[in-house]
Length: 183
Image (cartoon, rainbow, N blue to C red):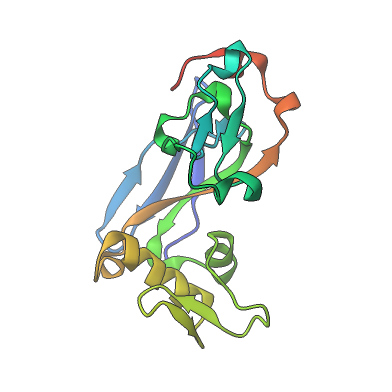
């Protein structure tokens, strides 16, 4: 049986708390989303490098995702986890949050997660076999999940946060957010 749709309850302090009745276990799940709430701005961390100077002091930042820099082997890249907020170039505004069981992922959401689909759209990448197969996008996402979280992790069917967002340009980001420390 599919889980019932998510309801939202707004509290007196204007924070959003999703709640959902879990009929499988007969309990109510009520949690704050650790990633924010609709309207919040997120910043995306990327693998990066700089020319030895702080970007705040006139240094230039390089992003591995850029085609022109990503292929160079002489650049010393810093992992995305160490990227300061001030170096971010991609910002996202949360538009919707819901909670659902992992196995309830839709075809549309599996594609939005970035699974690889062949150009003709008939085959999806199987992350276990490492080639294209005639499988559904949801099955491709399942193989991706298990390649990251371990064999049979799909079967545990945990609750997951589903966060929708829109990309916003840096000019529309609150300057206070840009000046804050790394949070």
